[in-house]
Image (cartoon, rainbow, N blue to C red; front, side, top):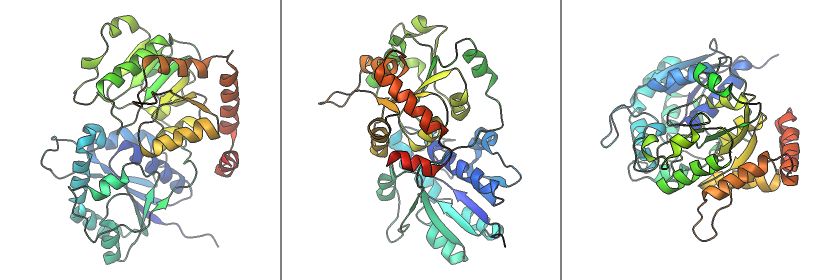
Length: 370
């Protein structure tokens, strides 16, 4: 007899780097016939609709975050604020507890999956519902749990469940935005650099400019999706002097949200410069693009070492031994190394990327790691 289908509620930390892996997990569960109710920030819902592959099984439930002092009006995810205000997003999520309780009483789910909402375990226990803390990575978790902005005394979330291996995303059914499809169509197959650092990674001004100069010096067309550098409101305000004029027609810096999964699937993307978040890597590894690794914090550094040293499927950007900073030359060097057909190390990396991309199961991925 087949196992009964479940009704599962998802309540991820309101950062796109967490919401998207939760949606990928939801797609896999929905494919098996399970019903999913997915709590999502109200304004963010439209961005994620194209990636809901099973709308008959996955229902988005929009959540409006209560106002919190010092949190900009309308901010609802970490993409809307600098990293210094991330704890305020968590505080606002804590204030949704009563709303979530009302939803859960109506939905009566089999289980709730969550990550950083410490109060969820006590809430679901009181309602007679199972719950599990499911983390796809641990970056930033300690900071959020012990933040002085949160009243967490005596409300531990218990032992979390870590998603093993890499969560392989499925192909969304929607088309790439016409703006990007048209722009990419001007170039050759596997010739464009895509650079993106996720919703939580914000560079300092100097490193922001060094990164862009490195992409420019590579001589290749590029699309860089980056948040404004620390302390600034727009990417345009802090571009290097003369940068826009020099890269006109072959380089774009985008400060808003972008369809990353669809971008990475495009046949003209040849290289992905990434901060090495687990979600970004999982989206990249199932596609053809080469990897340039530029980690900054926590598990991103571990992920980069795994990709570069163990699996040998990417090139990590060199940083100064004393200051830990990269420069435009090290960015350019990493890109050229991984893209150069005549480079022996580059050939080895491309061969390993092909093997890993074609591995059909996570067990084979783990076999490659070990």
